[in-house]
Length: 281
Image 1 (cartoon, rainbow, N blue to C red):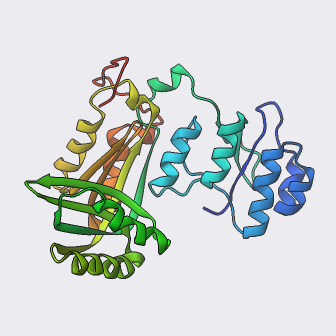
Image 2 (spheres, one colour):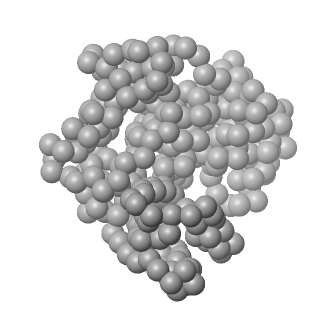
């Protein structure tokens, strides 16, 4: 997202307005913080912005949003900040606005159930059915895919009797390569069926508050159900819920989930979500 840049600083150390007229390379030379210097040098080298479009408070939330399709900071930049305990101050590259601070997680942050939603468009789903239920079948599928430098998104495995079904999503542009790899595996095994679906996308909600509140998943599912949007697959992490839906419903579904958690008003806390003090949803 153009116009947004990331730098590491403390709240009491605002960027001088004159730096907004400098290139990222020149600003890197002026940076006193090592992480800020690395971020700016990377931006100059890649001729792009490390940017954020989400109001988050922890590196964990930022990394989750980055992984599910939000136009956010480069994950490596966030990892460096988290590893060395450096607050990351994300600000507009042309305006002296306050911006967003990404800091170590505190207990109060769990009061905010969902801090952001993201849409990952143009996905395809590969399903391998009727595979033998044997040890190592997963490695036989994903090792050649990894060797082809293809990033796999969500993976779902189900078993019935002596057979296994494995389904996973990839970027639309990688479908042809993955399809060929999987077809070759089926031919070598002498059994199994390959199914390819296109025109899918993923809607995700992210927030550390999911660790200690219930009702998050049901609220997201209800928002999509009331709009008649079918969910094809669901995956979760400790602070994330993702739903695979038809691409045609992506933008509308994202807005519905966004509204369901009150994000337009800047309030992710909902009255009927109860704190459990333990696991989520």
